[in-house]
Length: 149
Image (cartoon, rainbow, N blue to C red; front, side):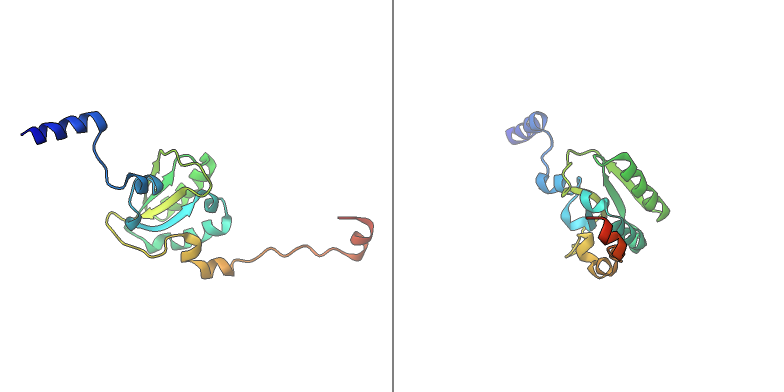
């Protein structure tokens, strides 16, 4: 009986205990084992990653999408439009993750999927490598002659 009372008091004083709170913080409130695809905030800013995500959102028809609430509203809204176009459910998660390397967007499942690779650039590396690279502008002889840059 005293064990139950102690548990009740601890819960009242410290809150409900959680499993792997650091992992849950890193993955916007969910566990790593439930993640299909992860994009960092920096990766969300790159248009080629956005195109890759748009192409593969339909690969996960029963998934949910978590979006970091600390990214800019314009970036949030552009990704929300993509998610809605793919008919997926999404949640904007209020978090204190603000660094470019922190999670910005996650495609998750309700149960464990244990994907080996979740980073969007690693998972779809063959597509990332095929993205057209910008070619430097060729300058004419006259431009080189009269401009020193």
